[in-house]
Length: 377
Image (cartoon, rainbow, N blue to C red; front, side):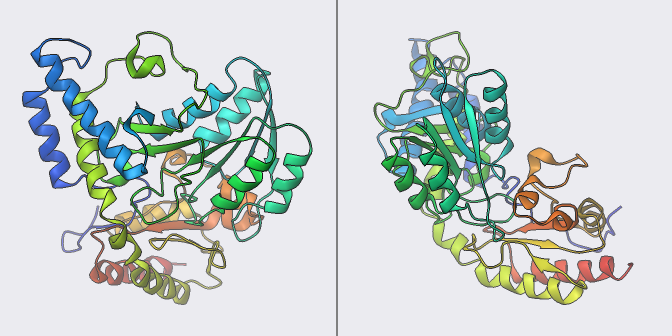
């Protein structure tokens, strides 16, 4: 168990973010006042519908789009599924992506290919963790492509992908573009505003889980993954939760004004990174030479298992991760680091992701805890 005299430090903000007080307040108020079915025409339904539309409008302001272009979903995973599976609803085609995408993209691509609905071309990844644009250009020249999908920020390494260049190349070949912008919204990082579709998850911007959005350009050809009711213009059937929507609205408003707070985390991240490299023999930062989000560092500690370090640091009161949260609990090496060509790092790395509330004291506590853990080698 964690020693009672040691403070807990949360450095896993890429996995999820602590909800804002105003998010909790908004959800509490909605649970009391707007619990009705948003599709019902009576007063209780109208009160619930108002919370849903407030969320749509707040996301639209954050994404710089029209509210009519926002489809509310259960989160980033559903948004990615809707974008990919919707693009290949009726006829086949080529899907171009990479092995460092989030599982809600990579595994959907694999399934589309198994179902015979798409031919997937996996684009190479450079050792620094960025997409190989030369290989992307080759992929696009190999035949007509229906969709190119790229993440704005890699959730494990924090490497910022060349979204503008990817979009430009895709447009020249006549392909649609989907950007997984879950780790970018509200953090001062490009979300790919020129893309046909973009995904967002509320819990990554200090909102609740179970709600997110797909932002689609006017005219984007979307098809429902599920069938049922006519909610969200028939694209996402099911009763919307006005309580979660109220939380999303508050979180999106905060995110629209909070990018500077995330950019200001770079000095703390750099201090943590320097200290960790001094502690671990042969330790190295994955993706260090590429443009990176200012709040993330992913460090390989040769001779260690990343999962073991995560468990040991947790006992010291430090919350970190060995990869994306969707893969936690598995023994599989990181597909992102394998795609970067570093099989050793794929099993020996730990991700530290800071957030708006991270303080210099948290960094010092983390370094002291890491020193205790690494000294046991």
